Length: 88
Image (tube, rainbow, N blue to C red; front, side, top):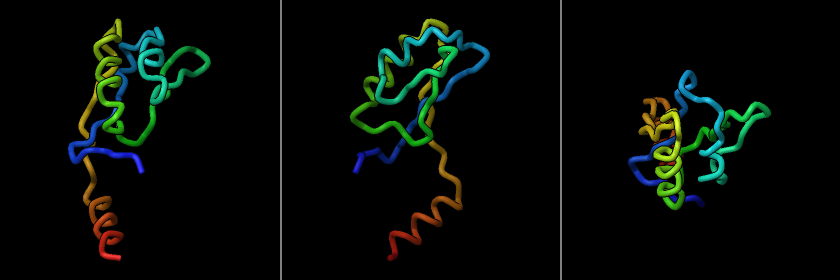
């Protein structure tokens, strides 16, 4: 199981700012792949705790500042589903 902290974060791209430099994929290849034009393909799931330092480095290394780490906001439906599974 991958450990993700309570304050989970995920990578997001500011698409108008992204110029497909690919630095993010070099810094954290475990999380970022590039499409055929060099734009990042990011996972939907939160960044695992073990990869957070590399994800932060990718954010600060982006030459156009197009990459961000944002808090995952869980919807009420997701919380309800998780509670239902926890009760099992």
